[in-house]
Amino acid sequence: MKNSPEKYEQLGHPMEWIQYANELLDSSEILYKERNNSILTKTDSNGEIIIQKSGISRSYFLLIGFSMENLMKAYLVSRNPNYLKNGKIDNSISSNHNLLELSRKLDSFEFSRSEIELLKTLSEGIPYWTRYPIPKRFENITNEKVLSEKTRNDFLSLFERMVLDIYNYVNREKKLWTDTELEQKIK
Image (cartoon, rainbow, N blue to C red; front, side):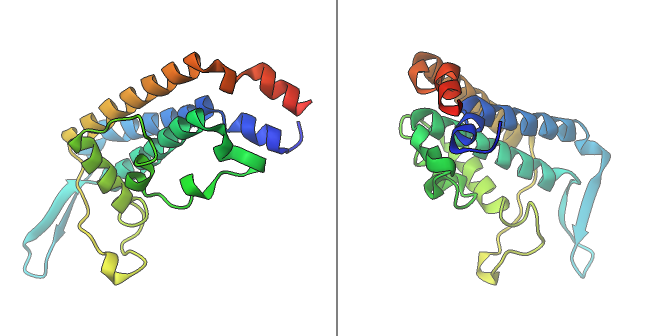
């Protein structure tokens, strides 16, 4: 099948976004199991410990951040397929990695306080400390967060709730996303 807006819509089916989110989750879990095999210690000029953490901490946050971003897009696209109109994704859901901002578009999904804090952490981390030693501008310097069991549990709980919500919605609203409908568009 050649590239077309219809193929793009098919590739952007909510279940495809969930598939990617699951792959990123699986990768984060592989890292999490190895978290104690590499401990990094940062000290100041006086030899005082500034931070001690697992060597996979930043990578773990990056993976769960991208996983959550994919889930949120699955949620939004399941409710409004027009986010994938004319062979491109709408900028309103794809212009940055601010999960806190993206979460405000999920009208009927309730986030707990700890989930909002997690989204805030991921929103700060994805464009900065999960990938680079410095942000684009000095005004954006923030403290790196350290991986904890609570972080992992909050993420896994939110992940599970969102996936169930999306599955239930897509199963209930099959008229929005049917293979037959997409196959007819592609022909």
